[in-house]
Length: 236
Length: 260
View 1 (tube, each protein chain N blue to C red):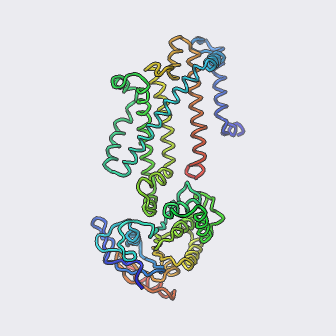
View 2 (view 1 turned 90 degrees about the vertical axis):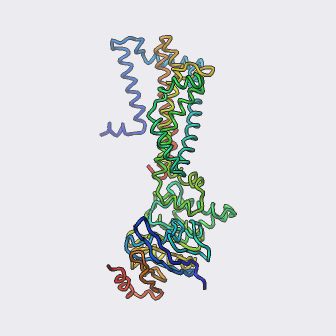
View 3 (view 1 turned 180 degrees about the vertical axis):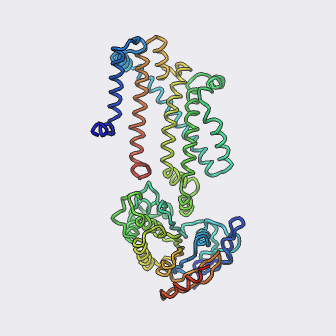
């Protein structure tokens, strides 16, 4: 099987500071890959490069064999910030907004059904007429997830989306994400600094330290003993 | 406590206005002031109703309002163009910043001698003064609004493959609406002042002249009650626009969305 995303020898610096060094990674369709590492290790930079928001100094990232050189609706990003939702649109309108742009040929009925389907998937059907200011942090992130999924992107890029949530909400959303992944088979690249979160979610865990991939760990078995291994890899 | 609560209700403005009118009437009736400088409310309202009845005040007010709406429209469109170009080009942003630094502190009245030289004393001259009053505060607020937009919105616009113009219309403008409304309120107030001042100085522009010309004319004929009647109408329009038009817009947008 060919990789959906191929990251080939990526180097990236900001001024004199080298952020990413010699990054090579293949992501297979349907996989959920978690990138773990300490703050400032280059996780978000790598995600922004895959999303086309940044340009690499060296190397190339391909999506289905095509070089990524600008953002597109094929790689949709879900951010950590709660204010990623449009405050002036209800939950339903937030999800509908990009669909109207990307799926121009859909009838209003099809759009409505599509939005309802994804709102049901993230368990927000009862809140479709709420404005973001009326939602909890977890609900906002669920809405952002529905908005991203509704576009059926080839890859979902998630930048610590549950990082600002309390432990219980975080667990609920992790479960929801796994259920959604099971149903939609979306390929997900998920950035987190939380090793346990990576262990719960990922098929493979990419351990990033000081801009370099230390190891790519297979996590299909969800073996708890891997936690110590990742911790020791990340320790100074 | 009850009095405090009473004055915190939405109708408190009306109560204050009634109290001020009462104080005015007491001064006019009992204080040793000239009736010419300080006419009673009865005289003022009589002058007001007479002017409304013969249509003079209504037409002149409509004339001023039409002018200010035209000026506001032109000013807002120009401000939008300059702010949009500032968003897409850093070079243009520097040009806009320089223009705002130069022209924003410059009162329109100070430009009047030049305006008379350039375009005479007609309606276009008044329009020029209004646009000058509206444009710079509007640009300041628009630019501040666009700068306050979270970076995540720009990324989302790119992610959904919006062009810069589409992002501007569909994301940046609603996201910056709090600032845009504040800019519009300031611009309206400045434009309103500018139109009245300019009408007083330029005289009757168009066939009838505006509310500024109405007040100026009353003063010439020593009709002080008429002057106050004109001022009352200006105040009434100000309150109407501030509380009802802007108030309604805010209630149905930024307040409803939890942005203020």
